[in-house]
Image 1: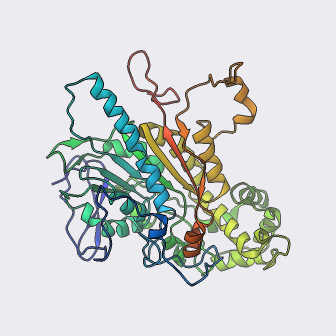
Image 2: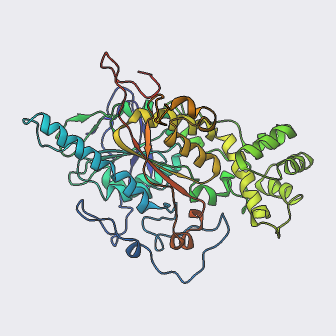
Image 3: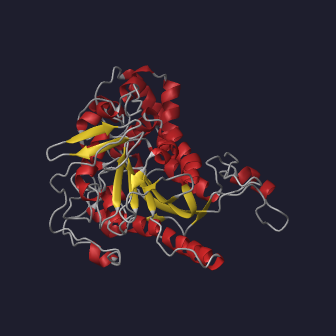
Length: 468
């Protein structure tokens, strides 16, 4: 039996998936069911290296579709892909996360030098997949970990938890020779509050509860993209290529209840386009979509009210945007619709506020010194925020205005300690991956390492911003 107080688990049965909510009690181990994974899938041992780029990419005679919302690659085209979602830049993400092991090894060697009686037993590694989706990144990571290591998969979408739990059930049913996978239903901005409440028992230490606390996570992966399943489901209203209601809410009705402590937003995209004034719509399209025709599109939306379906919104855009623009492909109708839908989705789900909370608060509080933060972003707002938090320690634009105030006469930084150190430069998906999965084209990968945690004179841990 495994203990899971104060959290929502997803239990897998042979036919369906149940949500189990525990208060101060216990939840029995997950029921075994049919394995999601095919018998031909390779299992990498802890000593096996990640396949090289040439080994993992398969030849494909078809050209990649330039459409932003084209069908995603199938599991036969990309490693760890499924009909739910194809993980973007999975190899680069896993390599970035596993870089934390070098920092952990250096720390353990230093502790052993300080105390010769220190036990040589290996401490488990804790990782967080903050945007679980179809579970592709989590599966790739689990295959590289050792028994006793733990991966927490977090997602606010109940459908994503169902799919990933079925796929990774072998890692959930008390695995003695595999790392442990723990699904958690929460928004990734709530990680700092939810993870310390989860108690797990790992396989390498019998019945010893290991409680993830602040500054104990070895790696966090955040993939800010919308999953292929959400885009390809017309009822969700995320895509303009198929008609559906103008909804765009990430959380579904099944994931919103008092037990799961989820608060589903009552605001939909239809509410925005039918109730906001022209000036507000213009600001949203400019700020969250970088849309050059924001004012004209906002005017067209008002003229076409009421807008009920995604087709209605697409038609409002088509009234003022030509199908093709000779000057720039960015100004064509398809790219413009993508930006309009993106801007509305960000506002409906408050993604800008969630992004700030997870980058400025949750990640610095959870990551241990030397831990890795790996972020996949897909548009300028996300990438700009990620770059600033890794470089300056805050999303606010302070580099141009006040950077000189934090440097001495020699140009050395003398301001408050920064939480992260960027690791290398940003990375883009390879041409081969884009050819197989066109949705990887706009992805930008950034990696950072957690710096030492500030400790005050009373030996109490504080985060970078001075909060206990």
